[in-house]
Image (cartoon, rainbow, N blue to C red; front, top):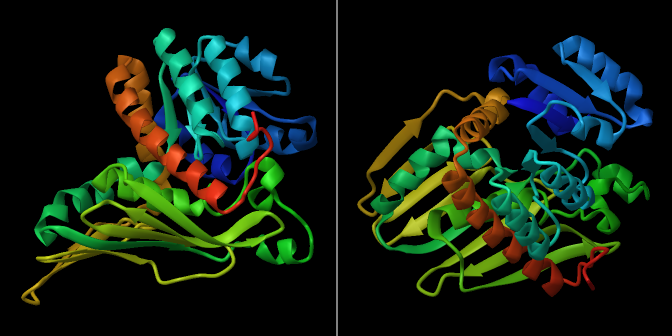
Length: 326
């Protein structure tokens, strides 16, 4: 995989140390003039092929895959240009602000037989696979509550009036687009698409800082709680008529099964959170090498479901992004 990386932010900082193990033949960094010095330092530290400061220059290089790790509101435009240039695309979560945009990108990818995927590390982790395999042990699902609440280090700045992209409706921010996306992906991966959703959020300055999303599955109910203005215990709970499963979706290092008779089973994995992106990118590398369009399509179908849920939820809460009226 010859990788072009768009961005120099936190998530890119997390990926760069793993690039040697990923083993791409080339890896280029796209940076803005404002982040030029940081980009130069990253090229030196992680032995990247180089950095460029114009997107057209990057698309003209011998890269086969573009990783879009820019602020949310830029994902659609940059992904579309990459696909039109014949590049595979890895979209950092959330894929795009609106489902229709994701459908358009998927159509472009399929027409050109290119891989298009959303980067959601949870989906490729061993702990999530084990949780999914254990789900039948609780019997018929009745209730589920997923938590992903952690007070943002940028929240104090928000209170002072300094608006970072993650809290900016003009840049497609908010907790739905960030932390609650993990809860929703977990539920969709385990149980499929819900019949309906209802979102109740704490909103300030036009953006959701925290909220509860109710998902109605007809024969059982689920809720997804996420926050960037407060914190919570980590364990999510999946309850059935034969028992319950407890798991921390942030760590995904195992689960606890408690049967209705009170028997308790602990399954623990060696935690390796530092390399969560590597697991996912190794999957993407293999998909691209094999041109595994079937797996890419399966992942994209789930991403489309999640994108639709999030768009419906934020509109229920009156959260408007630029371009929504189109």
